Image (cartoon, rainbow, N blue to C red; front, side, top):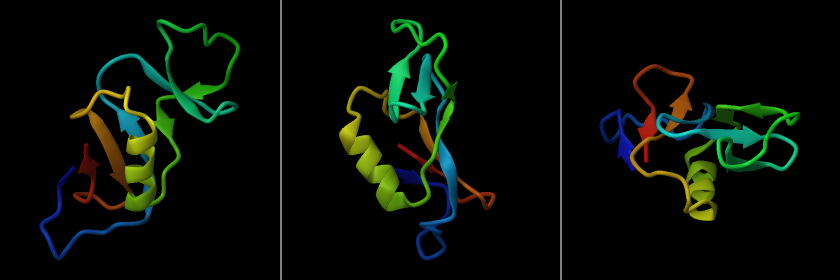
Length: 87
């Protein structure tokens, strides 16, 4: 994981969510999982490009549970500018 903020100034909570910059990934709200919406039939399901995730601990847990996600393009978005985390 790469933090945008230097060590000692990192904010590990107040996250707005997780987004994936590459690929065709969507968060399915009813099933609470990531899905490749090109390969799977996601029509008629509520989906978003952002998944809810409030803390770094929850972000790490989500990465561990979803090994199929492309590394290097997953961003945990913090509500404060300059405190995002890229995995």
